[in-house]
Length: 119
Image (cartoon, rainbow, N blue to C red):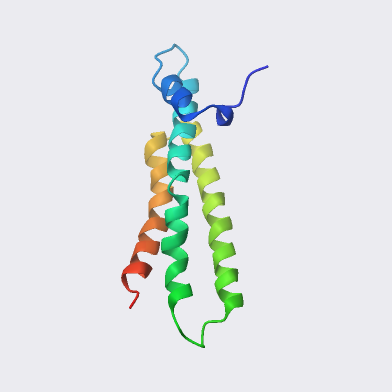
């Protein structure tokens, strides 16, 4: 049976993504999974930068329920967009690196903007 590209380690994905073989579909698929795994390493920093402005604001206007609700919505939307970027990256529409990191950076920019405005 053929293993899923998601089950490989980062070093194996890097080797398989850079391997020159006749089939163009396989290296692109491995490259998409490689960039997704690299991007997911930065998710804890993204979570801290994204949630901290709402949790550190000492105000009675922001309820805990809404912080939890928006955090959960952001988490689900992030993983949905990352999975769709993985599908588009595996289909070789554009470079997998551009698609995966292009889906990651809007969340990062929003988090950094909110964190920079924190007083």
